[in-house]
Length: 108
Image 1: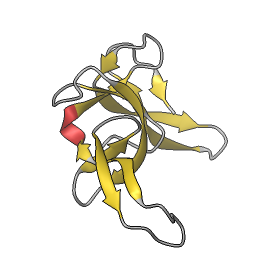
Image 2: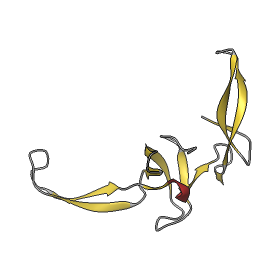
Image 3: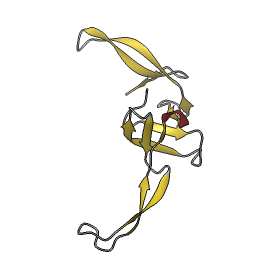
Image 4: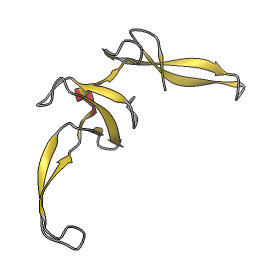
């Protein structure tokens, strides 16, 4: 999975198609991600000490990672991701980084 926390993504399928958001959590073993403001459902809670009134609380549920595309940092459009090897002068060795397929821009 090429997606990491705090990446900006565009939802390409599902009920929230076309929405953009930031990844707030990654569930690698299930292949799912949590995106801010996407796939919001209502959760009913009983009254407790933390929430004395109870009520209905909106919360984001995970969506499958294949339903989103990473946003290219240069153009702002969705793009696929490739891995390229660069030489890191600080560590004095080569390492793999993520890059956008369309612009070649390195994704931090």
